[in-house]
Amino acid sequence: MRYIYGHGYIVEEGIEVTTGREAFEAKLLAMKYGVPGKVAGLYRSAGYQVDMVLAEDLDFVARRKGEGLGVKVFQESGQPPEELLDKLSAAAKERGLKPVLVLYGAGPRISGELREKARELGISVRRVRG
Image 1 (tube, rainbow, N blue to C red):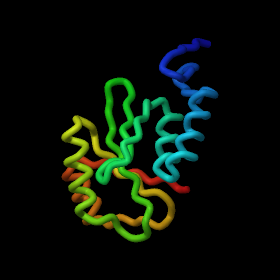
Image 2: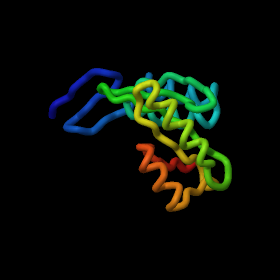
Image 3: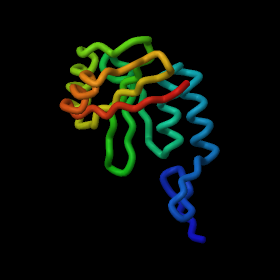
């Protein structure tokens, strides 16, 4: 067995393990920032460095191994408005990040047409069940 230590996680033959510190920081983010903090905690547990922005267009920035993500969490029922996709794409690209839209919970839906627009804008759409 080979263990590699660094960047807040331990890897045993390609398996990432969350350290106690990462778990603590994930809980702290969830308590302090609510739903965006819960999602940021998931990214933190996955080994990303998370900086909360909480602007109108971005909720947080996640960075790992030279990759930067600009993340917006959508939690309302229904579809996200098209303006949200445009603002997310512009804000992330302005900061040199890859835009990610997270649909949180069972309420948000995304149609094929909206998913196609997100693909054209380079936005990655993810779902997190609360």
